Amino acid sequence: MDASKFKDYILSIIFYRYLSEHAAQWAENMWPGEKGSYEELFSRDPSAFRSWSLDSLGYVLEPRYLFSSLIRRIEAGTFSVSLLKEAVESVTASPRTPEAKAAFDGIFDSLDLNAMELGKNEEQRSRLISRVLLTISEISFGAGDAAMDVLGTAYMILIGLFASDAGKKGGEFFTPVQFSRLCARLACLGLEEIPSACDPAMGSATMLLEVSRAAGEIPVGHFYGQEKNRTTYNLARMNMLVHGISCGKFSFYNDDTIASDQFGSRRFRVQVANPPYSQKWDAPGEYLKDPRFAGPGRLAPRSYEDLAFVLHMIWHMDEEGRAVVLLPHGVLFRGGAEAAIRSYFIRDLNVLDAVIGLPAGCFHSTPIPVCCLVFARGRSCQDSILFMDASRSFVPGKRMNTISDRDLEHIVAACAAREDEDRFCRNVSRKEIEDNDYNLTISRYVDVRETAPPVDLGRVQKDLEEHRALCRRLEQQVDEYLSRLGL
Image (cartoon, rainbow, N blue to C red; front, top):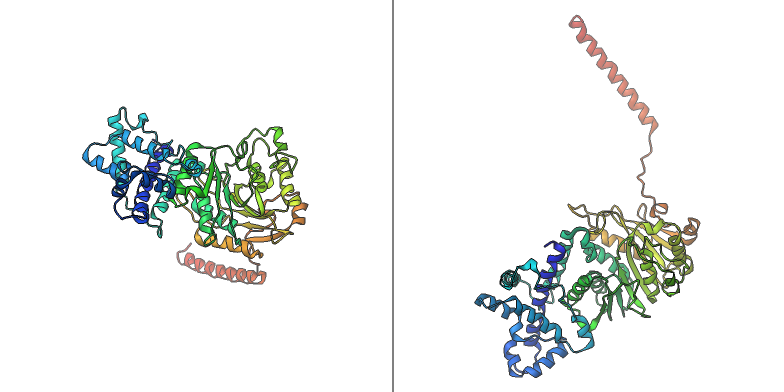
């Protein structure tokens, strides 16, 4: 299997281990009655235990379906792949609250245990899956280590490695951690309350998890996300649960964000996104009646859906909303409808707060440089927009470049301070941007050219005289040698 398919098995089985160990540790630590092992607690009063588990965790696992029970069956030689299939179906069928059902419905759809790639018959498939289960059982991460978040960190690293192996396809489900972190930091900058956070192109939800981290001690009220790809949508739900975000704390939707906006009239305090770059779309005329796109009077061109995502995010910003989005540089300067859309969110709405140029070769989906656009309602600097060229702030890598923690802090600090910094960032008046026909090309506003030192003509003349004198002395020496040789 290639990496994009292989990941569905490995990550799904790791997730199942997490559900099992989390349930066991939760029961052994939180059960209100007598203490004991998971199996003992369950056997004393199965009905009461099931009800308590559903209320506490949102799901329930039969003792025979615990990950540790499956491992014992393998060691005893009585495991079959059909048992794992039963276990998966049991846990996904157990939730009873709407939130838990939404979180677990079809979450293991990508774990196709009947796939011919696993083996021609059940015996071969059982043998291969047994090896995978045993290997994963030997990995020393624990679901209860909240301080280190070992399992969540391992899960995120594995997603990143699979994305790297998958190459361009990896960009469909994973944004490199440093850039997810940058977007999250910029979106949360200066906020004292975050009632909601959303990613309309969420992939594996790495950006939303970085929002949770960037918020620090500020609790995020609820997470929202939408993802068109079913496999990636399942991965996002797994990722949230593995990182301790309970099923009642997030609402994710599996649909095309632009064609079918599942968020309705909701407004969000924080939005982050790394949507597909320069994707073609239908752009039907009736979209001009959609309140998300009606404002500019023009739709994003059929060849570039980029600014449709921007307009979607702007429309869903609440009264203090922030939105940070990664996009190709073409959105900054292309004309026609895209110029009209830029003038709309700069001149009419005045919500564009910063334009940041990032290094090339940092993303799975493209080798080209990417820009980061920061939008804010009620922004502090109403008459200017911060332009920043961070294209040289990168650490070279074998496959991909990245930005260091120091560079990330520099970018965030510059956005917070909003002070001009030579050859790095500059506050540009909206009038100057208007005079440039709303062209946002960063090099128009931030001069990063290397300046040559001034030439000291007197010093140059003196050096020439010294060199000429040296040449004359050397010529005299050569003439003496030739004379001695009779030449």
